[in-house]
Length: 345
Ligand SMILES: [Zn+2]
Image (cartoon, rainbow, N blue to C red):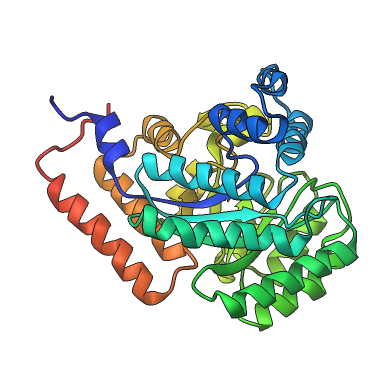
């Protein structure tokens, strides 16, 4: 078969840096989780599939539904395993998963974190070609005490599993609370060697965007409303990489068309940008699909796509040696792919 762009992108070793575990449940995964929870095939999954037109609110509703199905360590482990398998099937070789530790009547936050970490360790043997890390999330909707607990768990488990727990994320409803409420927790994480990948600029709130950029972080998620020159300068001066989630932003209605996506502007300016899925289960996408859309929309050649993959590993929270390993895979693929220059237009 003559290689084409689909094959080229699908086979390319890929790097995913912005993926929420609970948003990355495919319908099959939801079915499995529903079986685990209810014992039989579940009508709940149909409820999930009823969502067709999404806005930010619906997106958060879907998260809530996925949460309902993962209320035990066993379910968290199963969900995490399915997500890792799905990314592996898409030839993702490096994956940073993020998730908010959750306490339920059947599980403590610590058990939640342990279930995810244990699964990542287990999958190392089963799927050795994908390297998986964990970013511990803080949900803005929850109390500050809860955020402090998550910060403490991130620190504790980063010490115990330094090759797995790599950072802290701030996510959830961007209209909840002030960024300054979370600064002490994030500062503590940073001072103790954890990286920061924070959701920023999801809604129009220039005061907060400005204060977040001044505070600094390693990477920011979305950045849809980063528009002013001052903000772009702060982004550049503080060397903050941008995680761009094309379909997520489109379906949540924060960008009108793919072509309007701010990826174009930042990519053109040479700013570090990474294409990510955000919640591939919620938005019915894959990393290959997102890269394909990026390639079509922004006229990216096969070389550009390889460069994007290299950029993603550069922006990752992997160690130096791990980065070398992934670069090696990308280099080998680039060499093997020389023969099939991919026509983009
Ligand atoms: Zn996100």
